[in-house]
Image 1 (cartoon, helix red, strand yellow):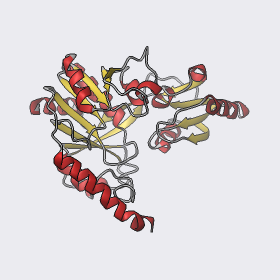
Image 2 (image 1 turned 180 degrees about the vertical axis):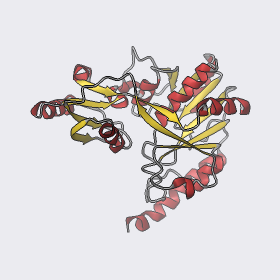
Image 3 (image 1 turned 60 degrees about the vertical axis):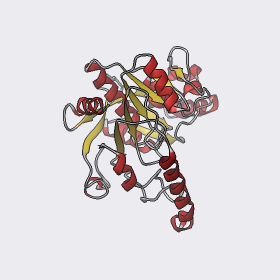
Length: 313
């Protein structure tokens, strides 16, 4: 019912986005731009994809920088993110996490941020979550889908979770990456005519945890359920799980509540790396972190994507 009621607003949203794209003049900053985006409002796993692409580019000897809007941060940019100096409240949680792996810039104006990265020597710019932004010329666009969530009800915001229709997005995408088990049968439905590669998130093999002890998990990411399912699949005794909104800004009271809950049942606290960078500094010592990386079904996929992007640039 709500989908029908909100359909007119959805049409207006789509019209406005279409007009913006039609009249935009994308800037060419003189570097290859590889965009990593998605069609849903929630998280689809873009951050691990950007990290994997950055590692592939480094192995190929390509000077690379990530450019992000810096969602959730107070600084407008252009700012080169420094993990030793900045906090998530300054630059956003994802840029702060990315900066520990690759040179990362934030700017509300993505074209201006990309130009700053280029001036500092970047030959390849990884545009984090800028697929719907028409202000920057893109040489290669990768669309990321979550195999468990799919595309929801298939409707555009506010009638559904989509930023635009899948059909319009695929017209501008060079490749799609489907993360996790394809529980929504996307490959045989909405992505049947697309170039689709498969990947999965895997826990850091170097991580050492005492799985004999119960854990209280918490996460404020796009789909917290994925994190909790990963813990269970690894054999953790998940005594409780607390979900927060995506990009949740943790307060001292949040951590006091979680620590008291864990203490009551003699459990440890565990969260994601993206959540960890948002925790109040005084409480990070009592929280374990589960790091993950991305593994593709086809070896060399990320190197192939980088090479193709560079050939287009």
